[in-house]
Length: 268
Image (cartoon, rainbow, N blue to C red; front, top):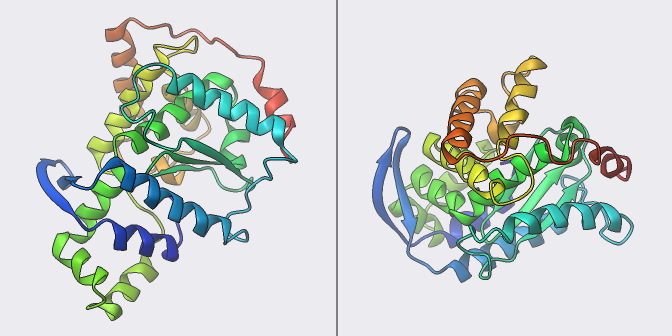
């Protein structure tokens, strides 16, 4: 997830009430005690910071590119209407397109705010593939992974200390070195598998996320985009997604293999 230091400050100062609940293979994880409504207000604060920083986040104008936004919002709604989203009515579920062909990335912030770079959109080959990535990002937001990882990174006491302004030097030092918010292995696996569950309730191939990883491997980009570059490996993720699709018995045939190019052509 590519975010600026200012956005990380907002995330940090608002994510201060946690309770530890389990461990995964990347260390302790936690759940938030504050309500889902707080996720929405947090995501809205981040959204405003993005709006205020067009140089780093050049969002496509929703009026000028209304057809492109109608298309990608329609894909988002297809997933929201599956009945599988825990916070369908509580979260904002807004999607934005960032004009940056050099960045192969997407990210979700708390409260259902989704951001897709044109570099990723143009890299993908089919609508079903974008749906796989869309499902993955919706899962990160719906399962509240972002705020869980902030707790794991900073710890409750240090978060509280930063929120109270007691550690200004350390906060500045840490934030200056952070460029990404990395999800745990369990978070990434859960998002992958939830994507299969979501797409199984749509006409799209339910293993759309796996076809994206296969494309990465075939093109030699083993590192992948920022939001999927840490762990597990693309090969492991393809195996798990494929196994989940087989277990569910969902359709793995392309639903819309040829309609994607018109969307890509509508972008600058």
